[in-house]
Image (cartoon, rainbow, N blue to C red; front, top):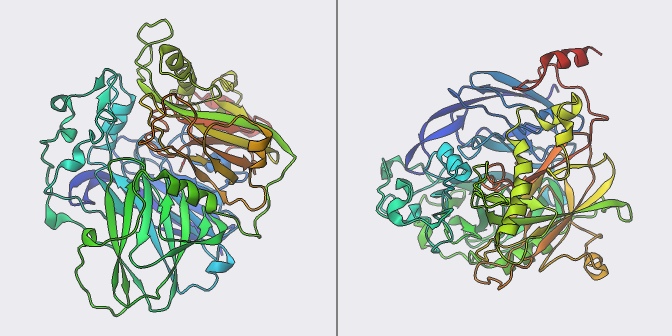
Length: 603
Ligand code: C2O
């Protein structure tokens, strides 16, 4: 076989994904784009036609190792330049060597928030448990705002920091249903003051952007424009693999099927020891393979996807229909399905810790860990001031910091200043036209790649740990975040309460026997109903990784509103040695010296 060749045409157009007509960024006329199916290790060549009038785009194949093809990672400003409007570019790489469930999405600005994404399946049985299934269904789960993605990004990055609020809808395979009679879904002020605020505090309803005012009337909301609900067919007594794709930009989800338990058998492309649950938690960037036994009374059952972790709960529904059952109309909201409350963080904590790898997975190398990175995740309001109390040169008002220092137990200007420094360093991620990989390879601006600026050098084949320590925001709220590492999977050594101090006891609690392997993991939270009096650490997750191939591999919050616009990104790179030469079609963006490139390509 010659591998997979596919074309993705990306366009801005108007569509009604959830009964409301809105500009979307579609792939081949659809949101999400086509499900790409490839064989393990196969050559994948994807030509992207950027047909948008003015927006650049890229495709990141989330979870693909890009072993020796770091230039194909599609992470703009890290692995390469984005594809300019009105041009085409071909990604070329070998798929990961083993079967599993993956996704792809744009990695430039807010383009993925606007809809540029889809599913990538590496075919075959991911584990013994999936060897004898009767069929499979793909559920691409996405959250959706009616405000255009450019407005959302502008709000997050401008002086008048504006939080977009919770999404209006959740989409299953691009289909959602917005209640046209209710504008409640536009108010982001559900827990007073937690959102809908700017640097001076909560915004009075009259000053909210029109989208978020209580009296706002949704435009062009037409119940007859609602897409049909997705129906997944199963045969009586069959076993089905549901591939659940966490493609959200912000939302943490829980998925359940009326009357059926689910058995998790795959975590992010890796076999998991079968774990039977009544519902599954899935955060942004994560994928789960779950088995469903069609062993109930023949009929039609409701599949419910519910937002968790934020008070702005929204639902999406699909149907599971036993073949031959009558085509009945169901009111999905009227059906009771046991799911955890949005703030039940014990559920999250338990389920994440209950997941185990199978025996076929490599055990994490022990005794060879060369370094443990401690990364603090916190949320700050920067107030636009620098350390002297002067208005800051930067427009950034709020940030999610990843740094090596822990914040003070308060939210005074000292804490803000420290975070501002982390953040200003991180501006090189998106205020630089030269991607990190090009900097390394062409030896340009490498002096910016310091640990102070959140660039960490690692070596291929060596073993590292990361402790992501979660901290509450200034209002005491400790939110869940979902971290994704490019270029390699990791072992999840455990999710813990409280604060990591490196004690022998804490280290002894790491699971080195059968940890699951993933590429995206949640930091635990204490839940908003449990605001600590002091800002102490509110839980940590420990992962172990071993770089597979050379490259510049971002590690970032996959709740994309937190990533580029708010600063929650660090980069692990393997340095200039051993980088493969760039592809002959390398995209060059501003700041690169083309002559340097040509000379370098010659030798
Ligand atoms: Cu799926 Cu850097 O992302």
